[in-house]
Image 1 (tube, rainbow, N blue to C red):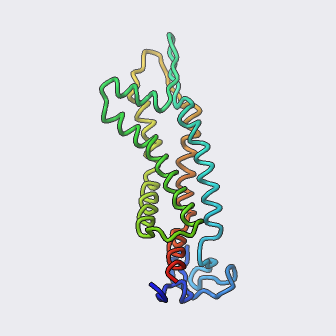
Image 2: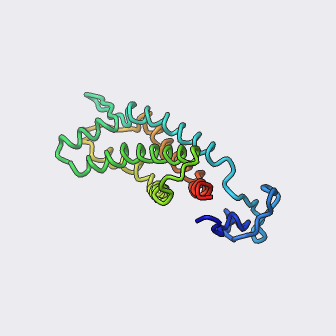
Image 3: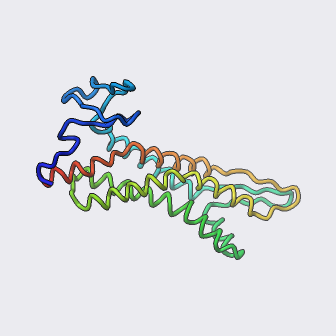
Length: 210
């Protein structure tokens, strides 16, 4: 890969809006614009690492109340009950709905944690400018990005969980405070995947080869 004619070395960049490959003027980070749509051209996403770290840290903070606070509150004339995501999973498991419990646990607990850990690993590797397994790290980013497209499944799982609860006469159910935090985790991790620039992975690998 030494001396490889990459797009970056040839001064070529792709427009973020219309994907047109353009000739980027060196030293004119904000002056060079796409000739087709007029969008400012950037060799790499501006402040990609800092923005992604901010979103990941915010999502990690919200992940704690999303799992500790009640996700739903059930009330009736005789009793009231508050359930967290984990208590809902335990309820489904004990009631014999093992498949549904597994889906809820995976989509609501495992997937958000996986996205946070994967994004943190990618950010640390880029900051350390390591050339370790760039292809595998790129595949990891693609997996995080793909999962992010289905992140709203996490919210849908909560609605399914609500529908499976055995409601008594004159009982009603409402979303708990954890639902807001949980939605925040979903949205923030989606934006974090969008702000991260995977080309930074290959920049470190190319510099190592040079």
